Length: 549
Image (tube, rainbow, N blue to C red; front, side):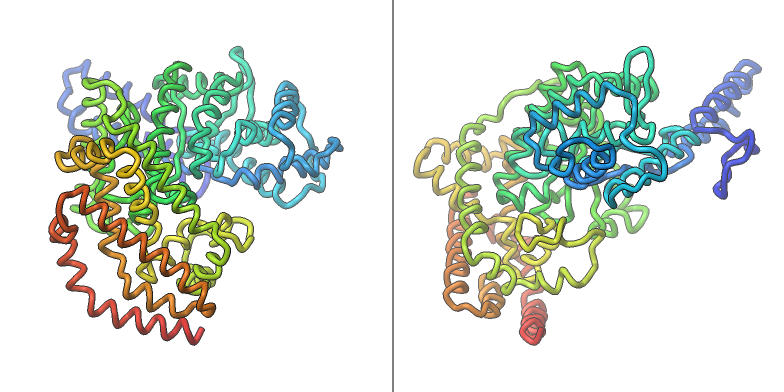
């Protein structure tokens, strides 16, 4: 068995193809030893090795392949152009019905669009080159070291079916007695609020497609687990799209709706939570995050991203890493058991949350879509410096357009944090709570009561995160950065709106909690107070340098 282990430098004849083959041999060894009375050797020598192989395989971590839906569209458009398909150049902008008609017809055929060495466009070349590497890995070592084909910015069913057509081009689609299936799962990533709201309908159509059904069955056969489908949900872009409150509630409602779709289709929906490292990008205490998830969304399995900026906080040393993993494992087990016992039902303040989220989103949208906002944001924060710093894992903008929509969430949040606005962690909450209090006072009172007695963990988690953002923001420092805005009218209009919403949010939160926020969160207040003087010096120096810039 030692001699048959794969070599990191390359394959050699007789080596195990996948970890499952080694596990099968370890099982033979364990049963043989047990049969001749050597059970102690099984426990001390064989079982630990088998456990390590089950946990890590030959790969330690599986690699997902992720690409934006627009990039996929351009790639397919270029393939269709090479094949002489009419209207191929406009494919990315075709209406959904026409896209589905073409995709449905093409997926009935096994023939590819192109042949080797044919000239195709840059996006098509990039996708096909990537998929060929994936295919080679699958053929040599099986699927153990590979995860899924994730489609960022999934907006429609056709965004997912396009991937099947691209997979067909290199041979990632196969056929057996159950039909055509894809050798890797295709996973939607719903990021904006609108996409989350449409997510359940898109997932239902996707699960109803014959290739998806055959793929789910094949992947369940290989893994030995019940049929399941993975769905990734994005916290960062939904927040940038509609503000923290609307994002939180859209994520909650979307998960509930997709759980129901999965149940109807007879598959388990496994959510991958695309959380970031800050409050406005989905971060927060792990145990509270798990408590806040909708009933039925864990079901014994949990997946989430850990962003680079918090890896050192959670995994820098063995004790901290073990503690964090225990929180995740225990939290997932606890949620699964509680959901099995308590069942699924709407929270008592669901109607109030619907109204609250809608009002909060309107207020947020009025700010970020207003004329002059891009100018204010560009000059009152260090976004231009952040974009040129090349400190992120990806470019700051998806396509290079100078719009808020095209800007990625990481530089968006980082810029507001650097200037102490922390806008993405609280803006719109105060107005939303005010609308609720005015139009539905009973709903507002019910919300306050639910928070004060911690009747609904999700509400406690949300409001605690908003309170953290409000406490960390600093109106005086905001005003100092706003002095960098050259147009006095633009500066006064937007700074006035932001400071007014800040005061309103603080007031409404204190009504919800029944006392001042510094008394509600004394440890946080003390921590901010201790750092205030030093941070003031740093901010003033940064403002001086930005003015020179």
